[in-house]
Image (tube, rainbow, N blue to C red; front, top):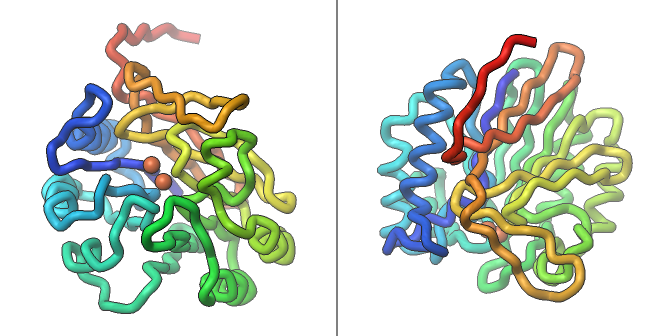
Length: 259
Ligand SMILES: [Fe+2]
Ligand SMILES: [Fe+2]
């Protein structure tokens, strides 16, 4: 199995953010993925697809994906708007935007952790029960995807807008840790590794702009000059997984040397 992960696209209608154009940056990521990973099974967009949730921004997203040949699945993040997303891409009127897909021997479970009008996330209103039932019924190794980090990450600015009940999430994951191989999240705009109830979790950086960890004060620290990233997940037949970060926006030379 090969998955491509694109997180925190933040496509803004005016195409400007911290000195970058997130639309151009996302399109470069797609082009790079096309050129190097055209054999991937699925692309996952990990939420904060757009910046303000407007119809115009989702039109930019649809336009960007028009030439993308791989199947894709999108999560809803705190910057998204479910109704505008559904208006652009279909999928019926029911909330939340959650899904299950079987890919190459794995079951991929896509959660919606969005709470309209707030930056923090939640799996209330039946979403956590849905996850528990989905994992209980799974007959193969699972990956769980959600926008918000499922644990406090030790960064005050992000922990103030994290998942509202990480302990409840950990209880569900712990009950099914024999089946869940990996949790994947976005939201923090930086690579993060964690363990949740014995299950490895990985946070993916942004295609729009990179953030740096600020451990000491509740402020975001962004470094838009760093290369944007996407990630590639390789899964083997035995349920083993490897996740690579692809710094596709690096402007420096790439030197190829035999081992
Ligand atoms: Fe974001
Ligand atoms: Fe977010």
